[in-house]
Length: 125
Image (cartoon, rainbow, N blue to C red; front, side, top):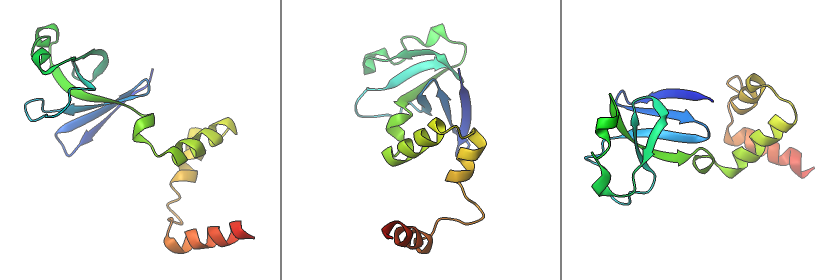
């Protein structure tokens, strides 16, 4: 079970847990489809209850000490399919987390249009 919290703009918190991303929302400002909204104890996605309609907003707040509303999405849906393929290949090849991060975030030689052109030229050979 992996849970990480990332503050966004000092207001919202994003929690990743068991393949899902929970992004806190101000339910009073939310609009549109109710798909993927949950109410949960702040920072504890294991307590999340999926809301089936707008009429359920507020209905379960009493079950939590510090209830928050969040949008729940699958990590896979939030990620570019090419990145998923690359990371999967690196994992299957036995790369450690640190090695994968080094491959994907080469800070000493940032990815630029010029470097991409060089990669393309090398691939064309």
